[in-house]
Image (cartoon, rainbow, N blue to C red; front, side):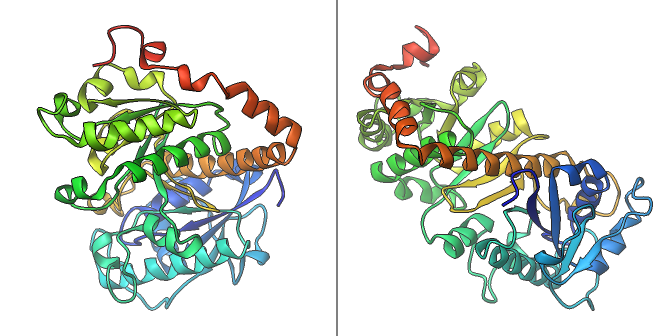
Amino acid sequence: MNQNKIKVGITHGDFNGISYEIIIKTLVDNRIFDLCTPVVYGSAKAADFYRGSVADAGNFNFNIIGSPDKTHGKRANLIVCGDENVKIEPGEETAAAGQYAIAALRRAVSDLRDGNIDVLVTCPISKKNTSGDGFEFVGHTEYMAAELDGGQPLMFMVSDSLKVGLVTMHIPLGSVPGAINSEKILDHIRMMKRSLERDFSIYSPKIAVLGLNPHAGDQGLLGNEEQEIIIPAIQSAKNENIVVAGPFAADGFFGSGAYSKFDAILAMYHDQGLAPFKAISFSDGVNFTAGLSAVRTSPAHGVGYDIAGKGVADPSPLRAAIFQAIDICHSRQSYDIAAANPLQHYARERSSNGRDRDVNVEDILGPGDNQ
């Protein structure tokens, strides 16, 4: 892999949403070609359709190729992934758009798995028009885990100011209590620590764990999950020399700004983590699938049917997702080189042993802040 020129695959998602507008707005800036070679998986017809809604597109056009080995290093490349005899209907949730989104995703993941691209950035899909018909997954995260590694990934929302991971992902709220257990929480803490070290170059990271119930259960008055499931998982993690604290009540934790004193936060369910994350980091927030053998990111927003084709979509989240994917790829390369050197590996482990286990919440937040 060329350390300075990563090949970035970009799936077009739902072509009736804002994907092509933000893709074109991002790739029209030629400076991006100094950092990566972009390969869009999608539709030439849809790209041409939306180019007119981008005010600064000028003479921008895609270099149509058949495979990633045909890329032009200074052009925006596009691989057509389906029948071009499709109807583009901005703002409409159609079956054709869902099928095309899945076709692009399947081709891109195949190329990622085979090493034909280095990282993958996925534009948003509609979960409604992509479900069924041979695609039995709730979203990108679940599909990529099944295709690449077969294990349980960590949905990790990341920005420069905040990183939030989820124990449960796309399941109904009523199913959350039955879906968490101590071992699952501990596994996610471990994955988060490894990702922070390998993907973000943060060694001996400080991790906060949120409770499930209001007031983090209020010592059992408002629920027993904290006492019976979450606290034992935290203690097990501490026994492994992981710097971890909690469980914290989510409202006070985010409202007081305590989150800023940790490298990452583990939430129990989707909206508990994503609502504050998007309130704090919407424009630069990135959805990163940690725990996979390959790097996949996505902008932290939906398909945007309500503004599709109007030329007002903000490309900042997609741009952030591309840059984050590149940074994570470089970080992994550096980490793996260092980890291959046993002396460096031993020094890093020795520096943390005997210290992490003694860290408590007062050391991080200060007295009186553990609310």
